[in-house]
Image (cartoon, rainbow, N blue to C red; front, top):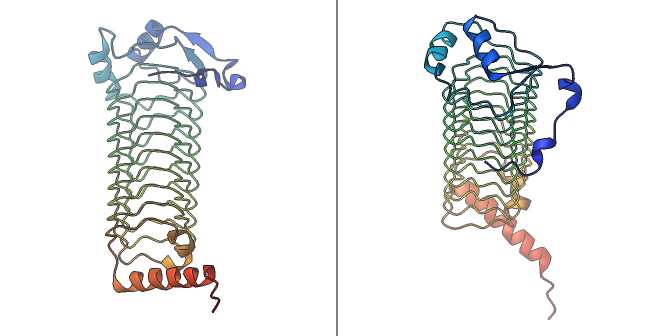
Length: 291
């Protein structure tokens, strides 16, 4: 993964007192049952999963107490399939980490920096990622059921096929994020930024989209049945073959929806009437009749 200039954005005030640690020392301490790795700076790009003793280490971690890596710097660590449920990593620096298919169930990663991290297929149900920086991260097929992503930065992140059922994404930044086929059923998306996001085939049934910004988002074949749309902005959004049946408060989001693109969009007679009347009213305001 390319590190394109973001690599240097580190909050040095957090790490300046951190103890530098080699990968070998890190592994030795894990085998010895140590769990407090807060405020350390691990050897950069350490290939943990490539270590000869990694399979044995995973066995140890399965019975260990939660590891604490809060305020630590583990930049670019390679830790595929790592088993760290309930890991404590408040404001940890994990940019460019390889955590493919990691078990991070219930992880406490509030404010963690995971820019560009590879979390494809990772298990993060009920994880706390509030205010975490996941800009450009890879989260395809990841499980984030019930996760807290309030105010998280997911700009340009790849969440294709991710499971975000009942997740809290209030005020999160998902501008230009890829959520193709993602499951956001009953998710809290209040005041979320989804400008130019890719939501083709996304499941948004019963989602809370109050005040959400979906300007120029692609919602082709997305399922929004029963979603709450009060104050949502759909200006320029593409809603071809999307399901808008029984959405709530469509009339409060209609000004933006009028500028959206409809093609075989699924609605009930109620939604059809609201859209039709709004289009006619807008057209009437724009026309000046002179006999």
